[in-house]
Amino acid sequence: MDKFPILKRLCKRLYLLSTIIVAAIIFTLYLKSENYLHINDVYIQHDNAIPTIDPYLYKARNRISEASANSNTSLEIKERHQINTSKNVFPNTSEMTLLIVNSSITNSSYYHETNHNNTKYIRSSIDLNNSTYLPSRDINGTHTTSPMAKPVPETCQKFSMKGAKLILLWTPFFGGWDYFPQGNFQFCSHCRNCRITTDRSELRKSDGIIFHARDILLFDLPPVRYPHQRWIFYSLESPPYSDYPGLEHMRNMFNWTMTYRTDSDIVSRYGAIVRNTQPKQIDLQSLQKYFEKKSRSVVWMTSHCPTYGGRDEYVAKLRKYIEVDVYGTCGTSVCPPGDTEKCLQEYADKYKFFLAFENTICKDYITEKLFRNLNYDIIPVVFGGADYDKFVPPNSYIDALSFQSPKHLALFLSGVGNDFELYSNYFKWRENYSIGIINRKECDLCTNLHRKDLKPSSYSDLRKWWVTDSQCRAWKPK
Image 1 (tube, rainbow, N blue to C red):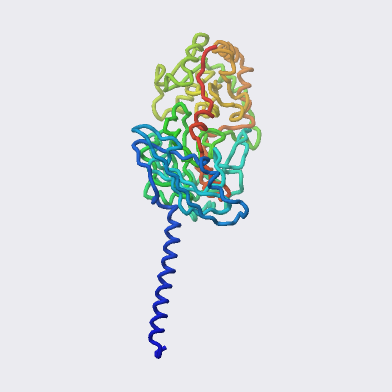
Image 2 (cartoon, one colour):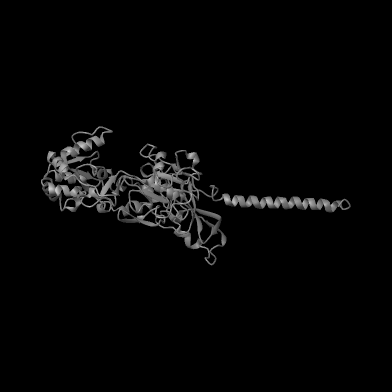
């Protein structure tokens, strides 16, 4: 080579050039991969506006050929439409600006983006349904979807935090941040390796992001949703007290729901039925002595009046035909904070019936008013939109709305209240069942985040699912 200096220099230059080319290719591939994780594309800046893309609008165009399920394809979509909006006006779907560049598509799935103001959602989707696909199960006789139907994921741990999933509380819960205590995971039977944080700097590392319905602010949303994340809509309040117009524009924003409804992805309840391992003997003699000492008929403890469901009007009619003593901020005296259990025991000692009236009549909506009173020797009278036999034992309650009118209910309560044999029938369920104030939302959510068999999906119209499908109504006298 020393005899051919020109050839030697040429080889060095070719080597240097090839090194540069390889480095450029690697850098280019890196930039393309980062395209899914950074907001480098076009944004829509608009005051108080949350533009929405309906993925069905361009889904047909984006479908790749399904001839080969394992083929990798690249696509480039650029649709730009002029946005003509004014302040406080939400642009419609056709006015949306969309930019997806060099999206890698595998197994006939496709990537799509949705821009909501400054928030960008990037996810791989195989099929977009109105809710996350979850195998079904029966909950107290109710057929519903559930994250617990499949075997426990292999990554679940009981005694270590190895492979822990991170859950970010993006919003408070009525101003407080302790609504998902870390300590609750220790009571989970299988999946305990989940960690709760309120540190927004950990957004990118978070696997689940929780938004409490009453605390969501349109101008305070995360700037990006990463492909591995699940955004969770959380509410224990019924729609009349948790609905707000912004939900209509949050299409495909939430992946999962966590509410009291049985068709939620994670069901969050105030109580549950537990079947006794062995039948319990009911002491009817003690119950009868207790019954004979009761001096009053009906009690109602309430702190909100008036309400959407019309319970105030119902009680006003009811009081014309039977005595009803009202406590709470809407009544004669208030139970001191922290003394609820003491007050309930005092009511059970004195009264025969407790009005467990919900503030709304909505599908599946049952609160602690019913579950906690089932632990006392007093018959709960319910007022709500749930099919109660699916949640609590039959003959453990009296349903006010099953009567023709408040007058008919009053006549029935008077009859039961004067006949111990009839009265005692409402406690026989205790032979086979017990009531627990249980909430498994932490355990179910942690298990769900560890599962790898769930198909990515989102709620295309959350407001319809949450408000319309809840079938809320108000009581009106006939």
